[in-house]
Length: 343
Image 1 (tube, rainbow, N blue to C red):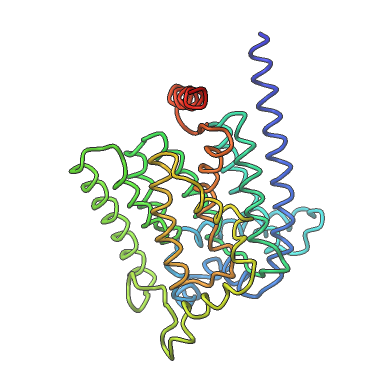
Image 2 (tube, rainbow, N blue to C red; image 1 turned 90 degrees about the vertical axis):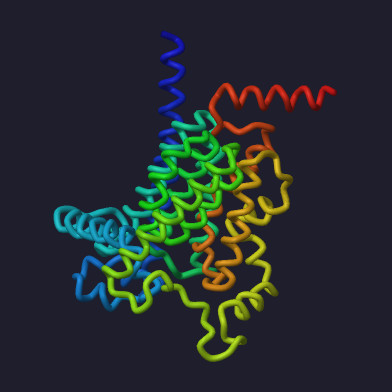
């Protein structure tokens, strides 16, 4: 009975903290939505009708799953505000963005509570801190529907990969591709698993093929000019006006080195504790190169996918083991670490 009470009280405590942080993000998102016209346009893209969506920005049109779910959130915002007032919320679009961001964060928190137990607070607070950096109104003015689903995907991948649930990853990746194309990079994780070489290559090629197929199908469906090649590096006029040149120039400021509240740079310089960290670093390096070529690195929300990788590595650094691993394996790693220090 005492054990049940302890577990129940622990779960309630974690849930209260998760709810409180979600409350903060709820209002933080409402404030950020009003900072730029593109924010409302993005959340409203599919809600405004299919004809409107076919004229949506090409680079964002292929993220159909994110925009479709955002349309549902928009309907929910309109429906709720038509029935009642919501404290400190002025428009349905503000409510939609608030429900969207806090809802995804709450779902991520529940996953960490299930997988990391008491140490889930490490991940919940870590993700909130990194999100807050990406959504600082003094340094950014963008909040888009695909930010949180992409983070959710990478969180799931991190947990499944650490637990060697590769079949579930195979199911996850093609679905994730419909939310944001950065899911394609996760296919490379199979190359550094403990599987036989033939199986590694097979799972990498198969998962990449499924992801590319999903991307092509969606791009044809939403009528992008060149399917799959929807992201542009900005080379139309000259190299100096390219994304790469502009991003390299941004490195003169201090804020790029503090991306995700400093967790990204810390992740890159920490040692490789295990094959999981090695896989995550491989994906991260390619992700960084992609953002420098195709993104705008000062839009700090584009780095959210790296948060779960960094937090996993930081947990290994802080505690010597990883709570995301199956309990028996996690205890074995901790004992090995203790024996190493004792020796």
